[in-house]
Length: 110
Image (tube, rainbow, N blue to C red):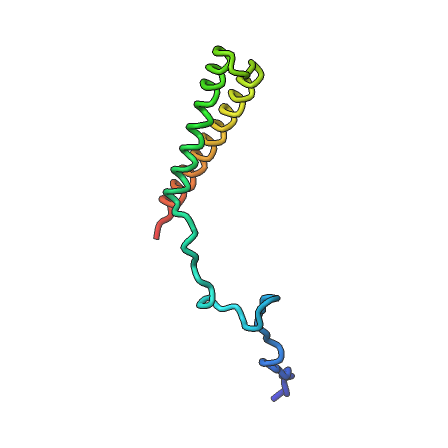
């Protein structure tokens, strides 16, 4: 029978816990508290939709200001239209990605 080499392991010395720089106690899951300030997904999503709606309606308001002579010019209308177009493109891409992710999740078989 051969003598096998068995390394000496000092478990307590070799394993250490991760510490945050400002705390002297280890990070544990029970030490992490969820904040009440985290918004709900529904609130975030409805806020984004309202912001998109305001952005899409902005060129009409700027055009009305140009027609009434309230200090806006055609450049402001073009900028507002570009912002609206970009916002709609981003919203469309985000919607596509969300639908694709949902479809992938639905394809997962347990």
